[in-house]
Length: 288
Image 1 (cartoon, one colour):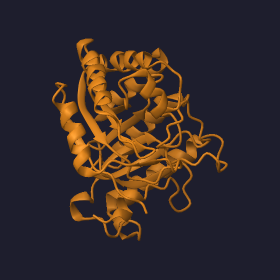
Image 2 (cartoon, helix red, strand yellow):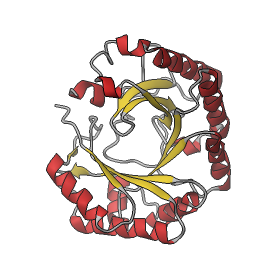
Image 3 (cartoon, helix red, strand yellow):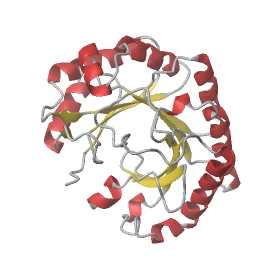
Image 4 (tube, one colour):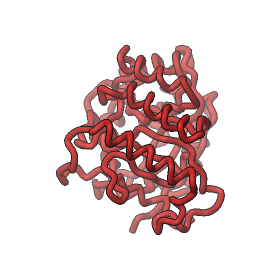
């Protein structure tokens, strides 16, 4: 597939404000994103993030009714196949021309959205209305709030249909965690939160491995990451998969680059040799 389809993940599609379609390598098809953090507020400051926070947001808050209408419209044109006529998606290979999921992602941390549970219910209703009960609902999260009872209650709405929770875990040590996540929060707290969530839900770990100042993540860090994953499993965590990937879209920070395919395979193999969870690799894309 050409770089354009996989690297173009703009969160503005035509006139839409809160919903956006992308062809996702990890979804292996079309993913309809929901931006429930249009104000760009996030409790992490990851250097690899592609959100440019130097540019003022168009919207400061979510218009719930408008968001629901946008999702409904996108599901309709995806279900009909009309979306593949759009210039952005016209070159999408046939195997990827499928609606895989509706994903809560966007410009910040989705679990901070106060109406998350209600939004998940609305997405489920939209899928039912269009006769697409098999389309997954996915929540992407940095796991900072996964242990909070109100967040777990909101996520319980996912169980009305097929779902996935993708929890970010890019580091195994506190020092590297602070560097790659741009926060002084405790990594132990993140691990605690993922373990708590994974005792109630099936969870996928998403580990993004970029280069930073031309340096790859050290192997010792991958080994430490494996230890954190093993800790989650030992505490009763139901982990479906570990996604190992690198940058495919241009980050806002020029210090960040892509781990080449062969090296990414090596790092993923090292991780896979130390965990009892399936590991999948998703290669990056050069954006220059």
